[in-house]
Length: 605
Image 1 (tube, rainbow, N blue to C red):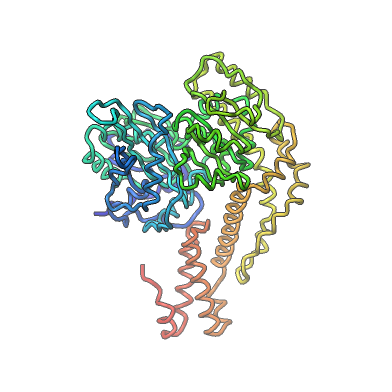
Image 2 (cartoon, rainbow, N blue to C red):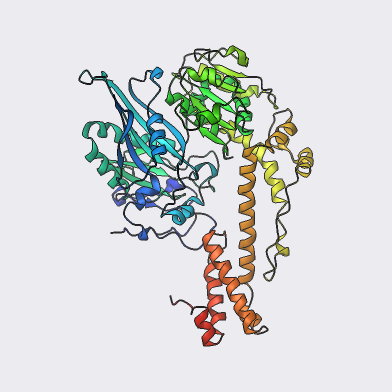
């Protein structure tokens, strides 16, 4: 039986933690505290209409168990729910990516993640519903369109009863959502139980998940799983960047076992610690979409470092391909390692020593050593020459001939060094580094945002009886001219060749992805303003001046606008869609009955 959907809170709640003051006894299983979704249509999706397994599918595509067979090698032993579909190519990818390379020597339990291409253009029955829930997500947390994430919990322990001498198995969550922290936390609960109790335990976990509310941006959720309750908040694009929206309250969280302050952020300081003298250069390389390979001793370190690189330009979305863990068995191996063309715009995380030779021609290589927190700061500061990278045993560092556009910010280096000397908590170091990257990216993006906003037509140019005006074209030279007076120097103290950095950025996939998104948002805003202008018109008075044919034509056009507003979730004022629907119904009622039948009589509430 379908569960009753949630009701929206009527007002914007700016401090989610205030909601913690409610009585703990009021928290029911899979309760959700709904936050407003920001500008948008009138209605929330009807969760009450969701079918069995729809709620599970809003979080995960499926759960896989990958084992090792002496004759077959790695094989998918279980897929749950059993009706989940994976192509043979997808299963092969999951098999190879779910186990560390043999040279990693990962004894015990290891967690990491990978990302792989979706094998077929599989349409979800939840498509429209998920697009709606995705609308208000920050760019970096939107669902993947052509890729899946695999979140892995791998166990390798000695077992003399097995021929191989080891028990080796992975529990893998396959999802379109980049909620790395959340899914790793989920696996810490699920995997140990599964390895002990096997499949019945997996079925129980999936049934728990199918009672969860959907991950709609802005909601604070309490999610029961196998006797544990996790509390999370799904971020929205309207959150103030760099702030945590969820804190633990002892009074209301007595039933909550785990409170996750973030669902997706990795520990930047821990990941960049081995090469942190070069953090600013790495930010530039990621911003420009340069080909980067991370060579690390284990999949955990390679995947964390790749995810840290991708997130260092947040709130800008990294628009190129990235593979937190990449193997020689990957279907894109030949495509990404060919020497017949320049390396593609991609960030790869690898652990196999074979890549030290295969990717020697790549322009930028990051060698990460063991991430166990060292007592003293890494000594090396110089960027190393690529020819010095012969094997994966080479010293940690950045191997590149790249010359940064911006001068190095010595203050952040000193601040982090001082933190290490004073044994500042890792969480504090991480917060300092994350704020630094955020301010750097914002300083870079603000001039672009300001220029793009100037391409928007004036509101007075919007006429209800003409098509909405078009955005003006983005002209690189015009943008560059604005930098002299309104460039990043207004918000950043960093000196250097900002112009050169912008010029290169405008040719990158990250600019293309960012501008496409901004253009779509602004076009939708124009459509919304046009719709609102129509709603303010006295349509009945206007149709009296026109023939029946012209009135029918107007009704059909208005219905098209209504369909577009609902399909694209245009950012109209609350009540606009309902008002337009009422206008259309009133115009239809003024027509002869035979025409009313053709245009469909207005639906009764």
